[in-house]
Length: 367
Image 1 (spheres, rainbow, N blue to C red):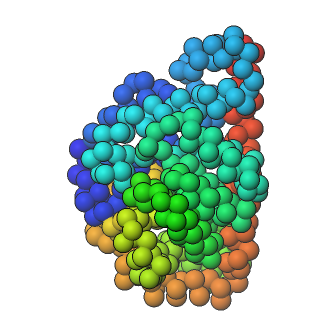
Image 2 (cartoon, rainbow, N blue to C red; image 1 turned 135 degrees about the horizontal axis):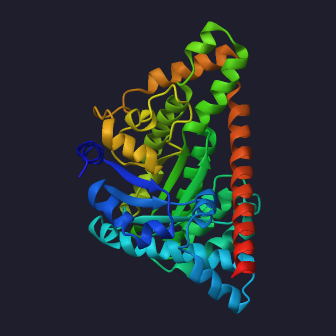
Image 3 (spheres, one colour; image 1 turned 180 degrees about the vertical axis):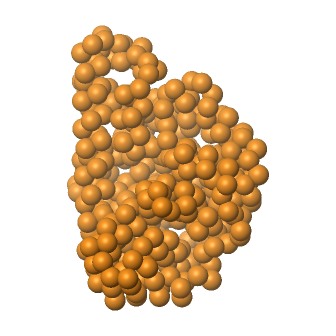
């Protein structure tokens, strides 16, 4: 087992893989990552599935059968993706059992075209929860304004939720409020709160990508000195907001009733700028009670040369606020940045979903 990843795990960071494919499952690669690289969870998204479907022959037999049965493309996509998620959930079940349900989790996302439609998102979450039918499943719901009441409703019904596409501190606080409201409704309905898990996926690298682009346009020496600093500062302040909620009477009352924390999950942790260390968003976001979901490239880089020196979040809040203030002084409009990132994120996942539908449609015609 990688000593560096074992060290990271020992500091209380749950290491999840941001990837899934049937090839990875049928070759035993996921089991190997669990054994050798401390992987204790898996996340997926439409882009990951579109990539998996475009490579190799792992889906050929199922596609043939779906074609013979005359299944339409949307139902075929659901059959294919939930099959992989169910398989991965079974592979991770021993981790789930060993951690009393905290880890060993697999995430599947609602149709991203529904990101602005609350009722359809709720219906989709219920359908996916039923189709996969595994206790170690997470349903990914985007943190759009319309997604917030869907998060509350899903949690209230006992569906474990991975809230995705969080960029702003204000929206993150709204996400935590939606989660707490769901737990309160679940408690009122008599549900066992200890079985309802949630994580909040706070996106990291995309923040630097967008803000660095704007800093380059500003072009001043002060702006240049701030490149590569926004994403880590933003994420650290998100953890400070999480701590505030964990110290609130509202949370303590739910905790006493058996509820467990909605852990912050660092997503989009592969660096986009080759000038930055390829383990930047792992090394600088270490603290207990968090999840870091990594592309395999980042996982391998961390295993090879990650610099895990201890907790790099707690105690950093003043510096993070200073960074955000300096960005504002340099001319960066934070609210505009996070609005643009959310819109771009939804559009990217919609495009990937459309690509996935097109790929499956073409394969069904060939089968």
